[in-house]
Length: 287
Image (cartoon, rainbow, N blue to C red; front, top):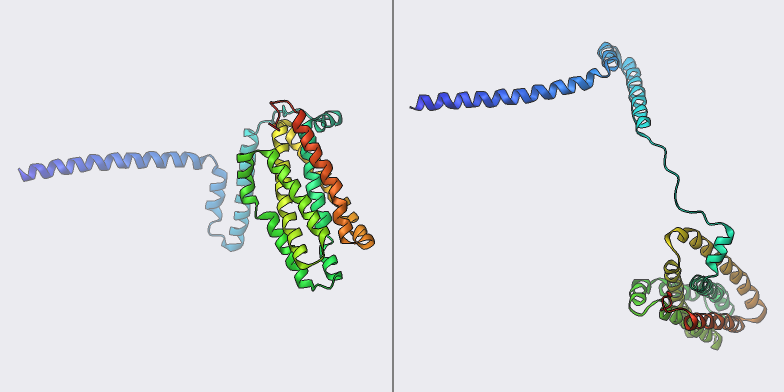
C-alpha cells in the first residue's frame, strides 16, 4: 500500500516537473525570439567578447549607439502630431474688455494698492529709523517682524475667505493698511515703527490674497493665464513706482508725510470696492 502511494506521488511530481519545464521552455523560446530580432548585435557580442578591454569598450559604445537608434526609431513610430490647442487666443481688445469688468478691475486695483502701499511704507523704514538715531539691529528686527506679519496669516486667510467671503477680507486688509499709515504718521518711537510695520504686514496679506482670490473667481480658465500675467505686471509696475516715490518723499518731506500720502490712495480703493459691491448684480463674485 505504501509503495503504491509512493509511486503515485512520484508520478504526480513528475507531471508537475514536466509542466514547469514546459513553462520555462516557453519563456526561453519567447526570450530567444526577442533576442533573434537583433542578430547583428548578438553576433558582434559573440565575436568580440574575448577581444580585450579596448575592443569591449568599442563594442559597448556600438551597442549603446545601436540600441539608442532602435529606441529612437520605435519612439518616432509611436509619435503622433499634437492636435492644435482649442483654447482661443486673447488679443489686446479682448484683454482690455476683460480688465474692464467690475470684479477683474477691482481685484487688480486692490492687489496693486496693497502691494504698492506696503512697499511705500516698508521700504524707507530702516532709513527713517537709522536717521532717527535707532541702531541698525533694531531696524532689522522691525523689518523681520513685518515679514512675519506678512506671511504668518496665510495659514488662516484662506479659511477666513471661505467663512466670511472675499470682499470682507479685502476690506479688512485695506482698513488695516489705513491703520498702519496712521500709526506711522503719529510718531517716530520704536513702538510706532513696530506697530505700524506689523499691522502693515497683516493688512497686505488680507488685501493681496483676497484680491488674488477675487481675480481667480472672476475669469474663466481660458482667460486666467493672460489676465493673471497682466495683473502681475501691473502690480510690479505699481510697486516700482511706490519704491521710487517713497525715497523721494522721505528724503524731501519726512516719514509722517509719507504715511499721510498713502491715505488718499487707500480711501479711493475702499470707495471703489464699496461702489462695486453696491451696484453689482446678485450673481456677481461680490455677493
